[in-house]
Length: 561
Image (cartoon, rainbow, N blue to C red):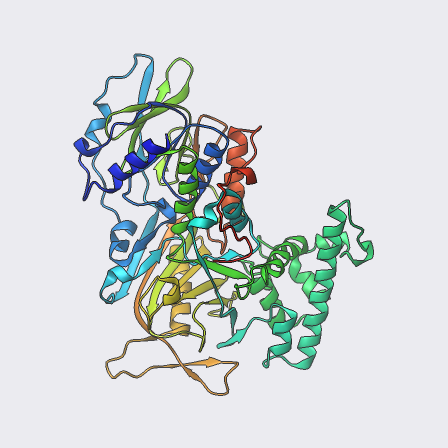
């Protein structure tokens, strides 16, 4: 089957321009345990997990490239991807006669992106700029996405670089370095001695709790129970715990939004419905702390994939193909097949007209799924309805001497009405996403109102970048670590848009839907939902066991590259 996978994949990729019906390959066999449509990260991880569990897998994608909603695409393709033209119904969907007991249910695609607004002229050649649809997004060195790559063998198909410039906090019109470790606190010249002592004491308390909790979880080790933070404090809103520890407003903003990664206003006069607890905050701090120094060649807590996040789905797809999964690109699924008597789904009809039978049919969120397409009511507080995103091309780094930098705008730092944090991730040419001498910047903020979300993104862009002026003059950005104002980077091109976050309600049927890109900075929630999906399908199978990874002679799990 591995040979068939390679043959079908090549047929899809090497077919040249837009495929016509006669270009579609015939798939053999015609029955699989699992059929997945869309090669986004959740679908690709599921394909690798199912293949590792010994299941037969067919993985198709209507696009000529991997990644689906998690793709990295050329700048020249961005406009058509964000605002696709409505595709006519596939005439081949009804070409093949079906069993008299089988009902054919047509599928439709949903528009995920809206309110696209572009400014400036894209530099040429545009193909040298790669756009991540999920940006801004990073991986913690110690998070589960990295562990899955190592366990599955996917780490041999993707290379990473550090976000070596660390994090900056936008506070009162200036950029301040985020003191995220004892060493960083000691080196930070913008902190007063009293602030340093408060932060030292806080991090010492948290690290002692993390060590004690870790020892308690390990039956072979003895922990100091007295070092644990009391349960009543763990259940408190994290901001209240920080106040109890004496952290002033700026230091609370550092911990809440730049380290614990809270999205919503935690410290405002009006209580926020999405307050994080002390326990939740400490869990993220523990992940953050354990990420620093995990890899010998990685500076800081975060890493980023070379060539963009679209490399991650490809890495897992390669792992699945090694285990026998069959891959066909440029192959839309036109309809699903349902057994009229048993009232459950039994397969898919491809755009070629071929019927494929399967036990499990899984789609990405760009498909409206029959019986599962329930309007999302926002009742789950972890999933705001929308996320506003921005992509910029700029002339220089926001932090002198640094290539890749994360900037956090806490709530109310841009305007009084700002109720969510805005995050900006700057990337350089050392990640092969843009030409030398230019930088890519990604921004995002969760929102329920399109206008308010886009306004926050634009305010952040205006705060850090200067528009191109005919006289060549540039504005100034105050950097707290510098004695004088630094020249703002020039904004060459930008695109601001809104992505819907639609949550299908899977109900344990044979037809399931994967999670779509969310508003968070990492993949923890996406992968958590993906693991639950796999457990609902195969409750007795282990999710990507370490023994599933191919053995490579140059295996080196201590390197970020």
